[in-house]
Length: 447
Ligand SMILES: Cc1cc2nc3c(=O)[nH]c(=O)nc-3n(C[C@H](O)[C@H](O)[C@H](O)COP(=O)(O)OP(=O)(O)OC[C@H]3O[C@@H](n4cnc5c(N)ncnc54)[C@H](O)[C@@H]3O)c2cc1C
Image 1 (spheres, rainbow, N blue to C red):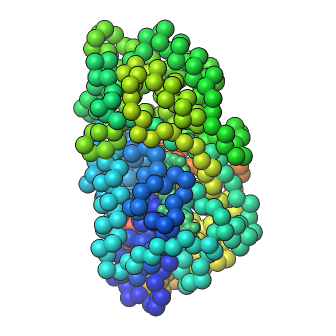
Image 2 (cartoon, protein in one colour):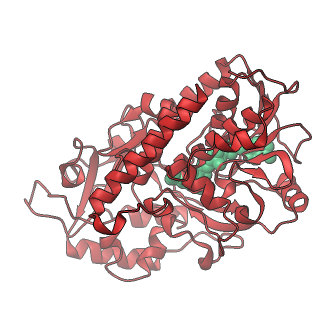
Image 3 (tube, rainbow, N blue to C red):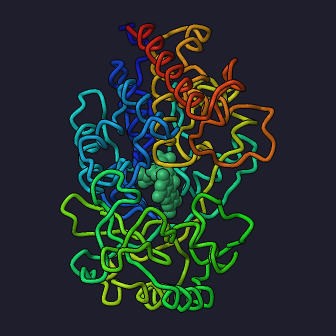
């Protein structure tokens, strides 16, 4: 491993998914880090716990199957020594083909590993401006606000972009009526990990009518045009038509109600939220309904009539930079060597994607701290044929117009030469192989 030239620690601002991953990658390369987070004194509107790497909404890191781009992304990260994926694997709870985690256990795992690393110093402080430092990583997330937000905007001379994001409610397991709901995974994938609340046509119609007329919470600046499709509030989706939910979060396909032996007309799925199975979240039910309305309308869902609502769904402004205009592929700011951004603020979208950008940033910042010349550092970036590398390419591509946050997907990867002659399944298989070969090449360079 190269000698560290840098005297001062690298400053990582924000101990979320991206910041923790970046700090870990730096420290594992023998680069001292100061990890600064405003917790526990300060909390964004979506953060409630004192631990680092808090999952602000769902406890799922989505599919774990390689045939799904986010599953492949996790495998790439696993091989590259990701702290976040390692802790997710360690605290996994049953969720069919998805990698869901015990929320508290996951954050504790990340926090302990960070706290116990001899080269990471934790500092609790709200940062109000981009700090001076040889190498600085800003990973303050989509809820970055106040003075720091203004400083970023002014120092980079940019207009920030934003959309609105919503979180789903959570209920207590012992308040769910198990004589109505049934345990099953869609298409029998995995074990019976989900609790399913079946609805017949009459129940669905009543629920739908109440939902579309329910009162929403007032949100300053809220504007329907800025909703991100991937996390659209359930009531907004319902406005699109009577059956939209039955093809979305309430789709019944792949499920059979054991009481009737038939597929229900519609179905709400509940996913375990903690290791003990004491909490369940309503899958796809992110919402901006007023709290009292959530209790009333979601209480119409069969099995949830007497539910104890542990947390209601909420909606927040979600900020990201116009990255294609300002960031390089290694997440550094063009013309400002040493200043990096990581996480959702760069326009990658999702827990895993945010951690993935932290992984790339941490690696590259470490190489910089080790005095590696820029051309060599570029050779150590993950190839665009990997999902992790494709995300870096996407957010830094100056040709992108109308930039919007991006989830991992196979459409980001370059075409295969033989693509047109292959079935979809063959294409995906070849892309998986190509990506994992590239990760092995990168690991060989690292050794
Ligand atoms: C409400 C909401 C729900 C979401 N739901 C999901 C979901 O279900 N699934 C999914 O995949 N993605 C979801 N996302 C998107 C995204 O994946 C998460 O926001 C993710 O946590 C982003 O990781 P991050 O590391 O970039 O930021 P964060 O995880 O938000 O971490 C930022 C950290 O920076 C700290 N911080 C902020 N400002 C300062 C400051 N000035 N000084 C010091 N510290 C500071 C915060 O305390 C926090 O610890 C959601 C986002 C929001 C806002």
